[in-house]
Image 1 (spheres, helix red, strand yellow):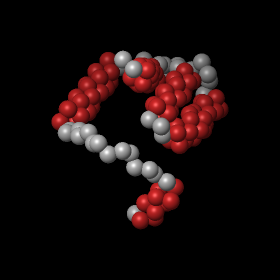
Image 2 (spheres, helix red, strand yellow; image 1 turned 90 degrees about the vertical axis):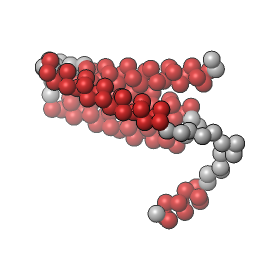
Image 3 (cartoon, rainbow, N blue to C red; image 1 turned 120 degrees about the vertical axis):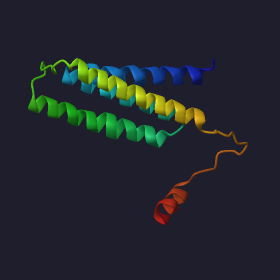
Image 4 (cartoon, rainbow, N blue to C red; image 1 turned 30 degrees about the vertical axis):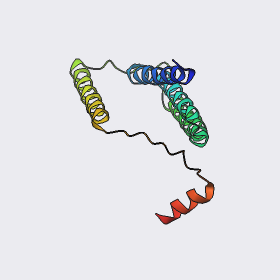
Length: 137
C-alpha cells in the first residue's frame, strides 16, 4: 500500500467518523467542533488531489468562516451546556432506513458506471482558460 492510499484511507475514515459523530452528538458546540474536523479532513483530500485552490477555499471559507459563524451564533443564542433532547426510536429507525437507502443508491450507481482509463496526460489549465470557460457559459 502506497502512502497516497494510506492518506486517502485515513482522510476518508476521519470524514466518515466525524460526520457520524457530528449528527449524533447531543451537545451543539461539540457538533460544531466536529463539523470543523470534517471540513479540515475534506481539505486534506483536496490537497492530495493537487487542488490547492479548492483546499484553500475549503479551509478559509468553510472551516474558517462558516464554523466560526456557527459557534458565535451558538454562543449568542443558547447556553454552552445545552443538550439536545434524545431522538425518538421511530425517528432514529426512519433516519437509519433513509441513510441505508441512500448508501445503496450511491453504491449501485458507482458499480454500474463504466469508468474508463485514459492514456492522455492531464491538460494544462490556466487562468485564461478558466476565464474563457466561465464567460462562455
